[in-house]
Amino acid sequence: MVIPQGVAYAALAGMPLVTGIYASLLPALVAVLFSSSVRLSVGPTALSCLLISASLNGLAAPGSAEWVNLAVWLALLSGAVQVFLGLARLGWFLNLVSVPVLTGFTQAAAVLIIASQLPDFLGWPRGETLAWHPSSWNLWATGFGLACLGLLVLSRRWRPAFPSVLLLVLAAAGLSLLLQVEQRGVAVVGALPHGMPSLQWPAWPGWSVLGQLVLPVLLITLISFLETAASAKVDNARQGARWNQNQDLIGQGLAKVASGLNGAFPTSSSFSRSALNLYAGARSGWATLLAVVVVGLSLQWFLPTLHHVPQSVLAAIVIVAVIGLIKPAELVRLWRVARVEAVIAVLTFAATVLASPQLYWGVLFGFLLALAYFLYGRLHPRIVEVGLHADGRLRDRHIWNLPALAPNMLAIRMDAALDFGSAHAVEQAIGDHLSAHPETRRVLLFAQSINHIDATGVETFVRLRQQLLSHQREWWVIGLKLPVERRLKAADALVPDNHFRCIASEVDALIALSPVSTTA
Image (cartoon, rainbow, N blue to C red; front, side, top):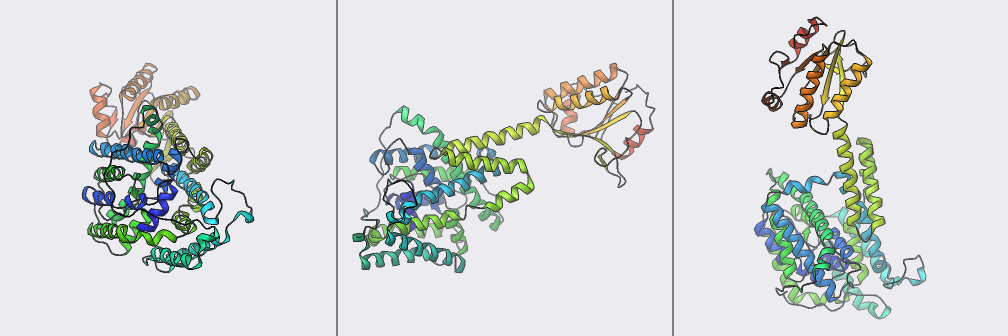
């Protein structure tokens, strides 16, 4: 799969086709040497190549020397960022992108990839407006593409480990030569330079151009490593090992740097090829090393065979590889689990499609939506008034229609950290209740779910206690966690007799207290 997919993905990235093979050699070797997940297949991937094409659109002509030079810089810069994140142990930083945002983006990217392959798949002349005019189709190219597409889909269901991609490419090359389809207007791969790539340093593009590559570099870094994470988690789970994401960041980053020094483009871990590698029984990194040797030998003697392969066959290979990313059922599942997050996924999908070819705006839009939703949740924590349920548990008394724990007492539970984001909400909730029920003489806070408190939270805690005492009301706290209790004690915010570490007996004791007691 490495050679046909590498050539096909290089075309998707707008790069010379042979660079797809270059990106499968030294980068794969470097990744095996420096990564923790050594059974992953490192090389060109559909998503990364789409991002390369989208990032460089408008900066240079696809396939030109300037385009190749900028793609090399994308590889070097994104690789350097990953190495830095790995060395600084900042792998957690990449987890800031939520599942809904990633779902919306990847499905939009898959749609855009398929749309980008339609001209080659149907034999449309490059540069023409994509319109459904069958007269502009090359039926020979369309026939090759449809046949390859159908056979690849069937082979995936029949025997996933069978080398169907390679055999179909060889068969297409032989049939193309026999029928002389190149003379019938079918675009073919053409001549590819053979021989091993040489190390080279790219030409300096200037600070202004590099400035335009900052957002694309960050997006390629993020998406490519999330691709790696998808495969690495599966691989490590099968081995019962803990995933070392920082070491994989270093290995994948060095692989990108190696790809750039070979005159190629940013690489990543292919989920489909990695899954096939594991399915075929790979036990260690030696499987990848052997694949590198085979690809290297093919680069010397196999490339002339690709000359007659129709471009529509390469397009079919790309389409089959990414069509599995389109999963409407994922959006339906998200809608059942969390409707707001499902809306974020749909809006990210729409923004990515509309922002094309500047795909990073779609991810940035989705990230900001998810961040806003996260902050809204932190600023509006769940604060409930509890009552004693028949099953012995303390539950939201308004949902379950329960009586108050005791007359003239407010018993609340806060399901969040008490920090600068949530402090105002708990203060407002208590204040609103006291305004509506001025007869309340005791406020009881169940703090088991408060696992963190900051300086703002401590100040709010102290202010609430002082306000309640100044109005002849009691302030009781039950179930403080040790880290929270330590901070409150350090601030002198706890009165020795007004907080308890457990619940059952203390609740009974508090209920039995006189509602007008002011000793706390």
